[in-house]
Image 1 (cartoon, rainbow, N blue to C red):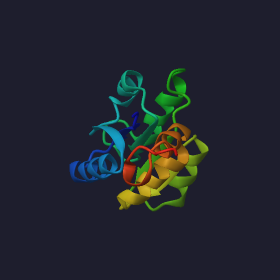
Image 2: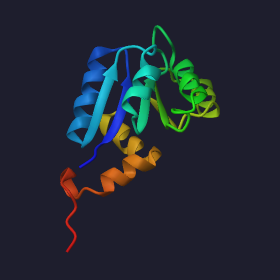
Image 3: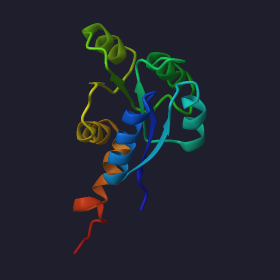
Length: 141
């Protein structure tokens, strides 16, 4: 059974681990990185269904990562969810105007992130729908 592949870029190790563990327990496949400068290369290699990126990454911020993804023909279609500890409306507005599928403020509950990933990614929603309750394969009678 194919799983929805999530590429997660988050510089805070604890947050990255919590999100990765929760998403994996929720039926997602997750590849995570602590920096933004590797996201494009990994997206090309892994072909994720959705990318989650922290707005405030220290090396390459979330908007720059999203711009790189949008500029490449093989990743331009990927939904990007921006996570941010910034509570500024301007950050959310700018992120959405530049093509983010969603903007979530941290601390973001892992279940909210998982629900958002299913909502913004058609391929994630389709793969999750193929499973029954609790992530088990759906049974057709």
